[in-house]
Length: 204
Image (cartoon, rainbow, N blue to C red; front, side):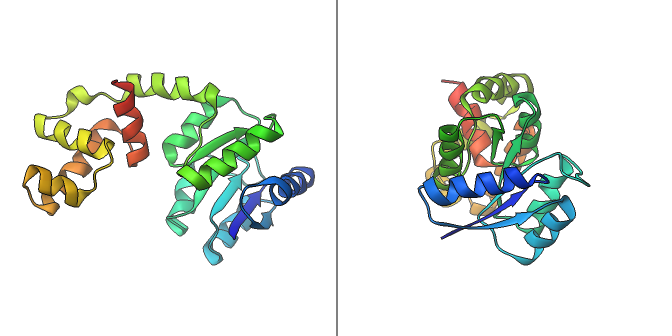
C-alpha cells in the first residue's frame, strides 16, 4: 500500500486527483490531504509518506525552499511537483531535489504514467522537460572539470556500480570512493546518482 499526501489549496484538485489515483493507479494507495504548506510540513513531520504531490502556489508557500525543508524532515520522501507553471519552473524544483514534475493541464494518462513511474523508477520527467534538462546539464555540468580518477569513478557510478564494487575494481578503499563521490557531485553540481546518470547518458 502506497501512502500519498496531496498538498493543494484547491478542493477540486485534491479530490479529483485522489479519485483518479484510487481508481486507476497501478498500486493500491492510501491518500491524505493538506490545504496549505504549514499543514503539509506538519503531516510530513509526523507521518511516513511514499509520495507527496505538491502544489507550489499554496497559501504560505515558500516555493523552492519547500523541497529541501520537507526532505530534511523525511529524506526518503518522493516529491512530485504538480503545477500550472511550465517546464522551466519545474526544472528549478528538480534541481532542489524533487523527483518529478507534472503540469496540472496534463492528460489523465500522463498523470497516471508520471506517478506510476515515480513508484517504479524513483523519478519522472515529462517528455517536454527531458530535452530542457539535457540542455541545462550541458550548460551547467561538465565532466571536463573531473580528474582522470574522478572520471573513472563517475563512469562506474553511472553504469550502476556501488561503492563496494568500485573499490574492488579500482583496488582502493571504500572511504576513498566516498571522498571522490562527494567531489564528483560537487563538480557536476548534482545531488544524486539519477542526475549523474543523466549527464553520463548525454555523453553517448
